[in-house]
Amino acid sequence: MLTTNTPTTSWHQTLEEWTQEQFGDWHRITEARPAPFAPFEAHRPEPFHTLPVIMVVLSQRTRVFHHELVQAIDLIRISTANFRPVLFLDTAQSPAIAACDWPVEQCLPETLVQPGENWLDGASTHLTRVVKYYGATYVFAPKSTQDAEDLVDRLALAFNAEPGVRASAAQTLGGAPVLREELGSSARGAWDQLPAGKGEKSFSSDRGDVIQIGFNHVPGSPGVLIGGPGATTEIEALTTATGLSSITSATTAQISQFTAAVLSAGAQAMSGTGARILVGADDANIASDAVLIGAEHGEDYILHIGQRVARFPTSATPRVLASVVGLFRR
Image 1: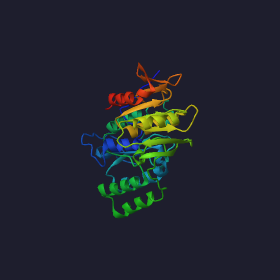
Image 2: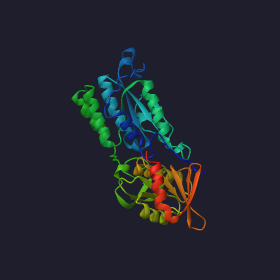
Image 3: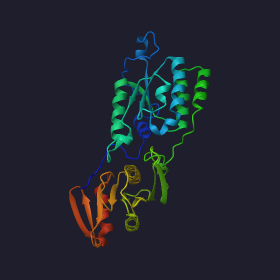
Image 4: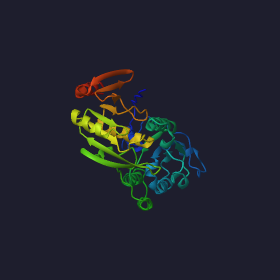
């Protein structure tokens, strides 16, 4: 049975990308009501209760600089006593936990969600609740080492850290490995780097799985065709006939949860608000609006949209898919 996924958030965004889009760059949350908590080492906690709270969002994908970043921020916090940081993580293995004594909130890791679920739906809802609970005035989610460096520098300036503290914080963070935003480091993130035209791209999961996908990116296309196992040749013919973008998996076997996540992410990134049409076989793990299946004798197609089913000759495919694309134009 067809499973149609229409998430309120994104399959292709990272938590950092979503956070920056939602909370902006140094956007002050004016209605924030800071929660009454104080640093562990405070002898008189009450004076800290009115200080602004900053939420620092760190995910598994940026863990290479977690330790150095929180140490750098802590230098500024201790020297100025002008703000209170809170950590929001998606992994209990973050080096940040051992590097500071800040309050910590953790959402469910993406590897533990059910197949076909959009992890970002739950993670973003959790983060929104935590921001409100702690009364965060600012929310930061560095995507790269450069973002982290900019954050430390601007925190030092905004909260009036002495020049020596500012320099020490920068030096502390400078010991972290360099992390750049790169398409392929997970299913999520940097999809704006996908080039136009035909190509192939490797993607790596947190568990070390590496997969290969093929794509035909048509900028401005009102929809995208998603190829399941063994549908590469069929997808190429349909792409030529319809002019839609496409994304396919190189595997001929049943696709993994990670492969499904990459296909869902790429399809949404290329289609924008357009239709996502899964070709070959239904797969509840892949987010799609419709499923196109070849008939037994290869002369007709069968189209599933929710509970509705339509059968039509292959010659009518461009016209039918154009109607589907129009139906799902958001």
